[in-house]
Length: 146
Image (tube, rainbow, N blue to C red; front, side, top):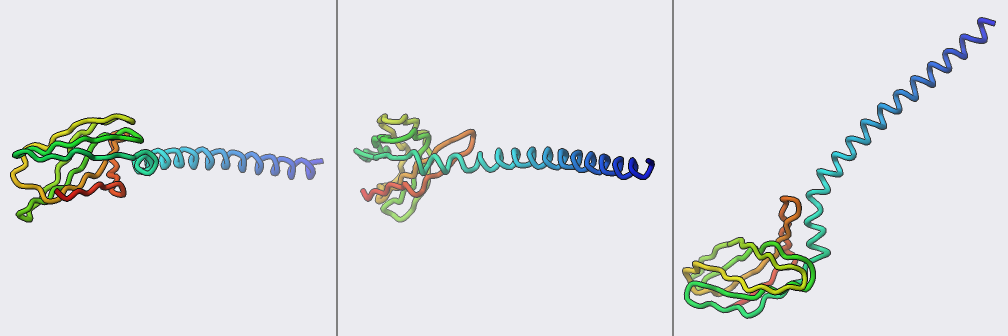
């Protein structure tokens, strides 16, 4: 009778060991996967928003003295910020970042102050802010020659 119990005890111990080990492995990999998804998801979210949620128009661009005024119209999605690249007639240029705050379907008049030159070319690049991360939607640049 002892010969029959010994293999049974060994099998039960082996199965118990395998089950315990698999629970430990699945718990660790599950938590690691969740952390990776959170880290990567935060970086991808704004980029996805660019692809799915930007349709804007810039109209009525006017430069009076050292101020450029323009209308920003959002036809799809909220526009948080605009990255504005300016090339002056003298060849110099600069980049400014302004808060747009235009909601989906809205229109807003914005000013770009302290322009110390006559503007030759201006490029508007929309930016979306999501959970303290900024996505620059350069595929949706709008360029104008003045």
